Image (tube, rainbow, N blue to C red; front, side, top):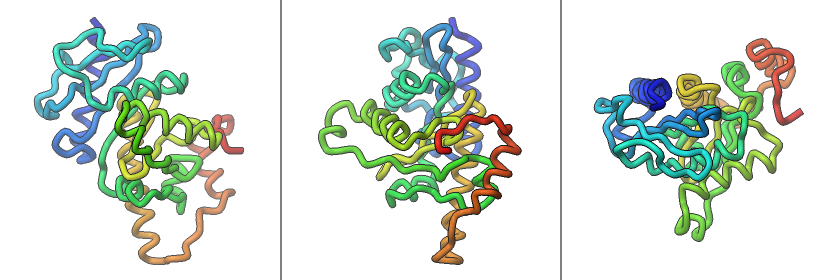
Length: 232
């Protein structure tokens, strides 16, 4: 069952690796089928070159348990699960440890919107959610990672469409999309804007964010004048 979904997710995981965003097995892609009440995700520890659609794991959206598959799902599955549960508009999730975006996460910093490349991608700075507490790490670490992301978005009036990526402090980035391929694209753009931000700051320490009127021009030109965004 779910053959189309498994192929889509398998192809997206291979694309993630091809972009150089997930060396070794450091990343995963999932996509949800809300009508079927499931999502597909990469199996744990399987090299990208060895992935096939048949190796994808199908997980229930109702309880986060495996409903089909011969492999263990990615260890990050509980994070994907809670994000799908809490963000009804969300269709796909990518997790990577891409170098530049992870550096901002390790520094506990948002990625500022310095230019039009960022504005085309996201209406806001890419936020960095707080670090998990010791208790959160020791108990249901991956699930709590998702809960920390959800809380940050809700507390700051953000949505996953106009802010298509997030960092978790001391950890790494997550990116979102309308489908698995779109989420991989957003993960790739995230890495580019993170690198641009670093280089911009190396050239000018007191650099300021892009002017709002220019950011609006680029964001709404690409996403439409009626594009929903949380921060108004």
